[in-house]
Length: 202
Image 1 (cartoon, rainbow, N blue to C red):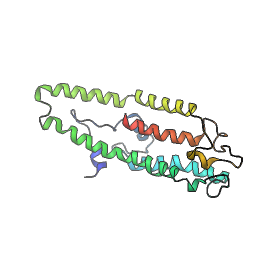
Image 2: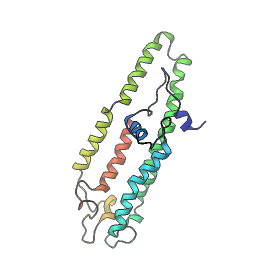
Image 3: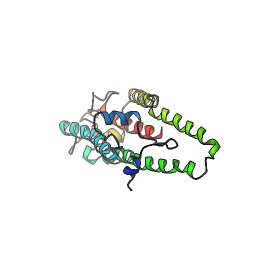
């Protein structure tokens, strides 16, 4: 049985899903990006890879920095951007299916294997319900989005950093985004990538 099929199994009283029914997944199901009974990891991996990568490619092509740039490294040569957007982000999303299946398989054995004795099963079920409430709440995501916004506003770009070298203009300044302002889409994409990693940890 595949990880996606295992991940789609419903929760029991003593079972816990670390991903299913969390706030972003409910949004994706509401807009039909994800099926109602599945995690849709493949769809979400493709969607977020496209959302993070295509705007960068479009801007670089429009500004002339995609394949040939005299002032520095072109975006086509900057493998770090492509790896972050096309490999790292999709892998984090695809890993949710494996995580879900593994945690639910382990969690379902706590009671049946006798690790949780009969006298403690009611307490165990209450703990599972509390974990579900925390997973379904908006508070963890408020923290993730707030931290991402603060990080984006406080982090000052530098044209000499390797991660932004592809966005340099001929005069040595950052030409990508709003003139290299703290709201530059390029840095925001990088911050959102790390914020997504933090969200997975939550």
